[in-house]
Each structure stands twice: as structure tokens, then as C-alpha cells.
Length: 272
Image (cartoon, rainbow, N blue to C red; front, side, top):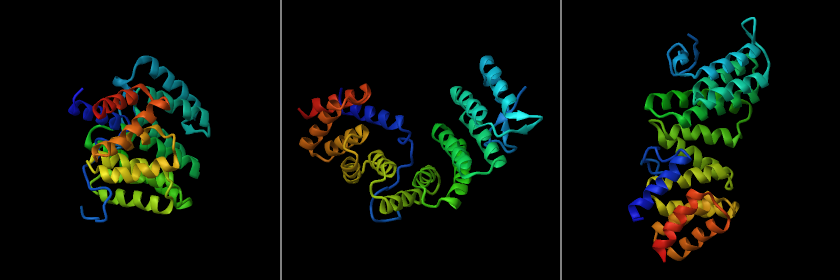
């Protein structure tokens, strides 16, 4: 496997975690200048007809759980039915529809927990969206739900992180980057923010910045396999081959997933 193929493998690993399609912005320097309708908020009226895309077996399960969730056209406070309905939509890759019902539930039963569930569902839909319009729509809906959470719990770093990531994929990526930096400033060991900043450093070719982020991550979480592997990548790309070798060997010692081990072996082959 040549260097270009290894790079593609690293790209594939980044794609698995949903970050390689992010805009190529400067992320880590000191300058800020650089038949049946199912819910889909991407549509103007809030719904889209998914019926032709849904397998018959899934339609029947959807109807069962909708009949449990709605009685006399009124939504009931049945979390089990909602979870089951959302799981069916997720199983057929209709993440936007799962999120639609989560928001309906949160609107009817207005609690911070329910709004976080709704925000999480839309964030999941956002991460799986492919076209630009869908990404923007799901990002907007994610922020709308999460803002209700932050109004009650302003120090919720998980929510802040996810909002930041929706901005990174928007027309204002630096707003998201600044939010991630702020999380790390307040909580230097925040695993999500460190990982996201490190991955974006790799995605944009800023490997020295990636070294800083992943060194911090691994210092706090010494068995984080992704962090160890990506630290090895950053060491390799900055010419620190002895350190890179140690990270890739550590990946293998800890029993990483086959895809990561394969990539580590390829790097080790080039180093040796």
C-alpha cells in the first residue's frame, strides 16, 4: 500500500466518525480570520411522504407504535412507544422522521430531558445527512432543540459540543471552532471537544495542531484507541517517526478494531 492509499484509509476512518466532509477551515491557530406522511422538518410544511421508501414490514411496525403513542389523535406520555417508533425509523435510515416525533413529544411534554432527546435525534439526523440543504436544515433544527436545554442547563458541554459541530458544517464554521475552543478552555479534559478539534486538524492538514490536541486527549484518556491512532498519524506527518511507531504499536497492543489495526500496520511498514 503506497502513501496515497494509506491517506485514503485515514480518510475512511475519519469518515466513519463523520468529520472528513467538514469544511476546510483553519481550526487551531490564534487567528479568528481564517399514503402515510412521516415527519421531515426539511420540508416547508414539516412533513414529507416517506411511504414509498419504507418497507412494508417497517410500515406495520410504525403503525403499531404510533397507535400506542397516539390515542384519539392525542400524543400520550409513553416513552417506550416513542423510543420504539424512533428505533424503527433509525433502522431504515429515516433519522429525520425519528427526530420529528422526538420534537413532537418534547413540545407536548416540555422537559429538559425530552428536549435533549429531541436535540440528540436531530443531531443524529444531521450527522447522516448528505446533501447541503439537508445538512443545513438538520443543523438548524438541532440548535433549536438544544437551545431549550441550554436555557435550563447552560453548562451542558455535550450539548455545546454538538451545537458547535453544526456550525462547523455551516456557512459560519469559525463560530463552531470558537465554541469548541471555549469548551476546552473551561474543561481542558473534555473528550468530545479534544477529539473533534484533533480530527479537524487532520482533515485540514494541520498536523502540528493535531499533535497538541491528541497529546492532551491521550494524557487524559490513555486507552482511547482513536486518539492513540490519530496521534500516531500526526506524529508521522510531522516527521516524529519514533513517537509515531510507539503509538501505532500501542494501538495493536490494546486490541483496536480491524480497520484501525490495518491502518496502523501500514504506517508501521512505512516507518520500518
